[in-house]
Length: 134
Image (cartoon, rainbow, N blue to C red; front, side, top):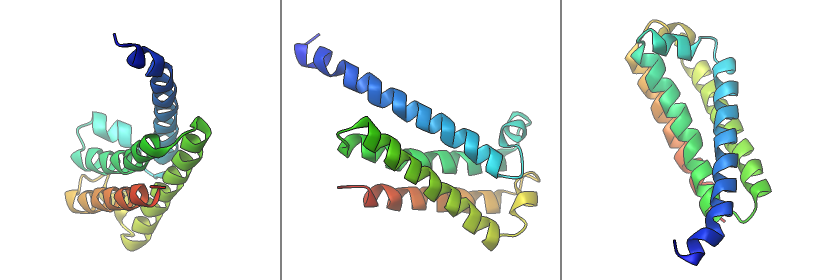
């Protein structure tokens, strides 16, 4: 292995570990904010739950990935990752207001609201990522 790769491996591992912790925390918080149990629904084959959760996770991962690419500290990554999580949760809450039946639609397997929620999550994540370029 080239010396440069060995020298940067600890930084890679540190950033990767912080990103995984942020991802796990976001997932834990997100599934506890929603009034339905995504993982149970997904295990039961509910595609709507899988699509909506996938959109939220990708919408969160995009700004975190961007911060990793532009950040020079793990504290910065953690802080901006927390902000990305809050923004995604706010996007979900806005969609709950816009689609008052969302808490019934996702468990019922309705794809239209799930797709809209996923696309809004991805769009917010993309905009969020762009705003975190410094």
